[in-house]
Image (cartoon, rainbow over all chains, first blue to last red; front, side, top):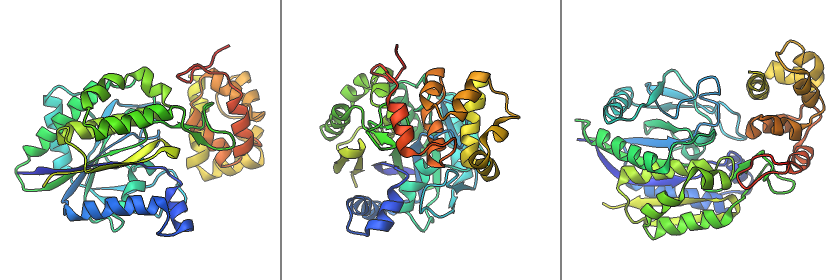
Amino acid sequence: MAQIVAGFGVPHTPIFPHFVKRDGPDCEIAKLFGAQKAQLAAERPDLIVMFDTDHLNTFFLDSLPIFAVGIDRIFKAPNDEPRDVPNYIVPSMLDVAAHIRSAVVAAGFDVGMTQNYSVDHSVIVPLHFLTPDMTVPVIPFFISGHVPPLPSAQRCHALGRAVAHAIESWPVPLRVVIMGSGSFSLEVGGPRMAPGRSDGVPDPDWAMRVVNYLEEQKIDRLIAEATQHQLLKAGNVGGELLNWIAMLGAIGDRKPDYVAPQMQNGHAYGVWRWN
Amino acid sequence: MSIFAVNHLCREVLRDHAFRAAMKSDPAKALAPLDLSDDERRALLAGDVGTLYRMGVNAFLMNYLARFEVCELNVKIYNQRMRAVKVDEIGQPVG
């Protein structure tokens, strides 16, 4: 049977590959992703299931699911031209993705799908750092975290649990890592940007509170406070926290090995391992 | 439907390199065939992203206008105009 062996929380800032190329392997970003890369390699994953919020690139406002899963043998990335990210073809697992979708629909979650698809920086930037040879198959699971109405944190946590049950009912042995991609507080291109920049962190106190709740394993408290109002208060992409919450639902609310904040960006790097 | 057209053209600036080039060289001509209201067309040509935001255009889609420097925008000008929009604590325009 397939088993979930670890959880990772990752940022996906699209300019980070450029910063690392410019600043070299000793810069903070390279070190933080490098530490996660080593932790991930130690788990020898056969598959990564990544909860992610598409930035209106895989989907758009003409057709925007609250939840959807990518179902194909491969997908392409990036489709939004992040600087210094090469074009990748990422392997996936069509049968497992279709099984996950069927199982979670049966469990009461109405999940859409996409086939013959591409993804944006929110999936490929973390993979660019963590699995740059692109040999580990990845299944993206999309959660609508940018365009209200947002799904509730409680719903996303329950979705994560349902995805875990689906994975664990897959009859072939697989070591599966769950990832959640995104920021805790970030405004991109909106009025709450920092002066002179393209982004800003409107609610750093919330971002730090999220880090504390993760470290202290106070997930019920996190879910209770992660209302739509709070997520929007944290920025126009503050709903990306829902991807971390779904990841926590899938791994079972464990204590993290570490959560490394990068508060100037309103996000963190988290690792949960238990074997 | 019209705001949808503005959102869509912002994404096309990212995706369609011919449209991006047209928006850089002659934005009025590039926008001419699109189904836009007079107010939307006027605001786009003026690079008035604050007005467009108040009309309901998605901010991070509009950010492509600054990233690719169309409608005489760049990061600095875009930032100043967008930050001038008064919003409530969840980013909704007020006043």
